[in-house]
Image 1 (cartoon, rainbow, N blue to C red):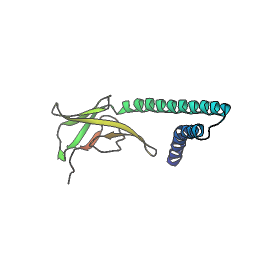
Image 2 (image 1 turned 90 degrees about the horizontal axis):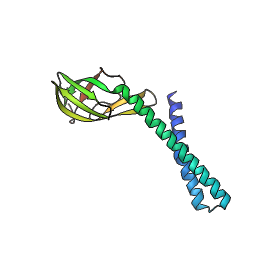
Image 3 (image 1 turned 45 degrees about the vertical axis):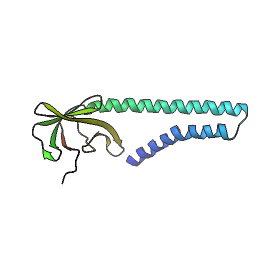
Image 4 (image 1 turned 90 degrees about the vertical axis):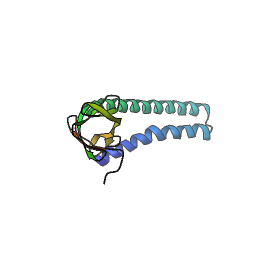
Amino acid sequence: MGNFTVAGGLFIKVIVIGLPVLLLLLLFKNRPNKFSAILLSVLLLLTVTIGLFFFLVGAKERNKLSNKFVGFYKLNKLNCEECINCRIELHEDYRYEIIQNSKIVGDGEWSVEMNPETGYFLKIENGPIYINHEPEGEIEYIGTKACR
């Protein structure tokens, strides 16, 4: 199933990106007659419109899915040290704040990424990748230095 998803995504990217480039090359390289130029222009406009549609639908879906990750998470380690009473709050504007004893001690950015095998997951700046659980979960670490 995962390979089918990857192949489908690749096919859509080839159509959405490759076809307009091919049509532009045909328009400018071959110097077609007036009818062919109009036909190629219409096809170019159509493929660009379809590409924009897929882009907007994908962005809307990603924003909708990212809302399930907004909330509080328990943080176990901050800069390689055990962090007692630490939480991370993920905001809707893709920022996060690290809160320790009711004080903000750090911040950063987060995003939602797509893996064909596991689906959407949470990616946190300076933190672990592939967090699949919803709020009230745990985040193992966040830090700007390498731990030993």
